[in-house]
Amino acid sequence: AELTAAPRLVARLDWRGRVLTGDDLLLVKEHQPTRYADLRDRFDPPFPAPPLPGDRLATAATLDQGHGRLERRTLTRSAALNACLAWPDVGQVLRRRYRAVALATGRVRQEVRDALTSLAPDDATAAQLEALRAGPGRSK
Image (cartoon, rainbow, N blue to C red; front, side):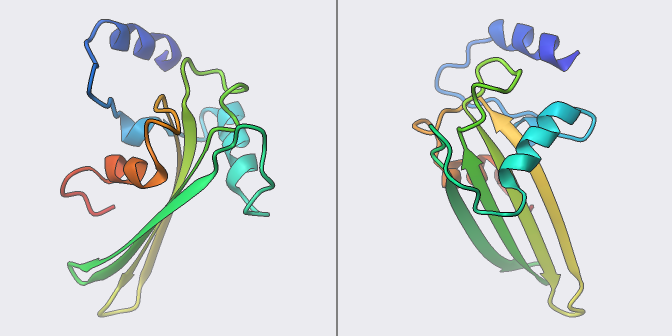
């Protein structure tokens, strides 16, 4: 349903000068098995994967300390899958790794999320995608 509903909704709105985010820049989850497998093949070990035509592979990382945690976020983006993904106007795909260590206990929490965006590599760097992903005031 989202493959047909999202483009219709976006087409009705004026997005000039704005970035549309939804589910953290359109998360790709396991219930989308083909797309999920494509991204997993691109970003899972052995990584870094060999360059592919049009890849524009880039990574941005942030390290923050606050609220009793040390947090590291690493976002890697690629444009190599654009032609083979069944999503209109995909500009690049991304993988975001999040790792937080509770300073008092040493407890570690980790997440890995894959997503796609219509922003092309020339429109948004890996660091800009991370900033959009995190959003104002968000810590993960």
